Amino acid sequence: MSRALRADLHVHTTASDGTLAPRRVVELAGQMGLAAVAITDHDTCAGVSEASQAGNATNVEVIPGVEINSDAGGREVHVLGYLVWPLPDRLAGLLERMREAREARLDEMVRRLKKCGIAISASRVREIAGSGVIGRPHVARAMVEAGKVRSVGEAFQLYLDMGRPCYVERYKISPVETVAEIALAGGVPVFAHPGSAGRDDLISDMIQAGLRGIEVYHPDHDALTAEKYLALCEREGLIATGGSDSHGEDERGPTLGRVTVPYEVVESLKGVKACTGIPDQQPRYNTPRSDSMGGSPGEVRKTGREAGGRGTC
Ligand SMILES: [Zn+2]
Ligand SMILES: [Zn+2]
Image 1: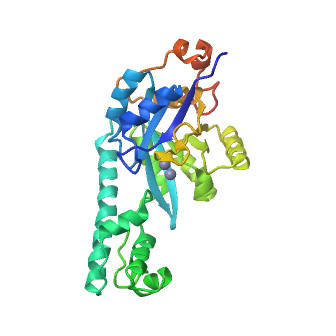
Image 2: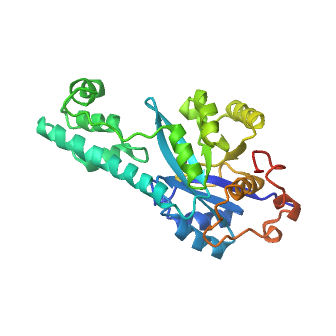
Image 3: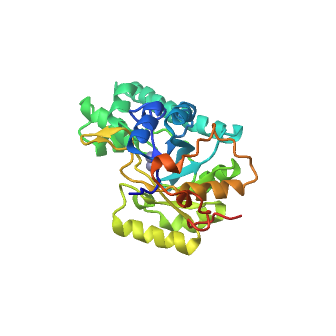
């Protein structure tokens, strides 16, 4: 029986907050029979090279990617950037500043709290944050844990709110700017799990800035949500992407591959990339052979247009 080629286009590794090394992710993808996997770590492409090497050995195509957290009036909007490889200096510099700013902000909050007589450790705050992006709520929880305040609310009121002694401004980039930066870098910007962001009102501005896709299929999206965004993609000519947003394993085993999309979506992303005029310099592309994957050749030769989305220039 023929099995269509599938791709998981949203995966984290130890290069950011995932628990599996890039190599291990790709090996697992091979065992699962995935045709392609996109490495989309937070604010970094550091896992892409290792993943690509493993991809060559396992016949899994590795799609370089990145996931960038942007700020929309206090709400987090995540934007995926596909096929940004090698990272141009401008985007690499931006990501570096974001990473540094996140760490520096935590250190500064810890330093100011100490001055106020509240000793908490930055490493404990990181533990509390787990796989999430470190923020003031995690600092507040560490303060409660240390018995320095009675509640998270009190921590904010007395110390962490804007205007209070331990407030530190955050490095912010808007969703529209993020999309524009990815597009400028020759990547394909995609709105990640918009269902969790709750900022659909930004989509038209993001499209103006160069948005080319929406992550329709994601563990946080139920069937109705996915349907809503799929309709939006069709209406706006955007590529409907999807992925597991895997950070490693849960009690049922690896989360990789729990949400996948047809390989045609990869073709659509490449179609958009081809239109940027920036040469595709992906790390030794390893296009899957359909014979060994069980799919028919026709399944991988559809154009971006056929697969849906703005796959043509
Ligand atoms: Zn995300
Ligand atoms: Zn993610």
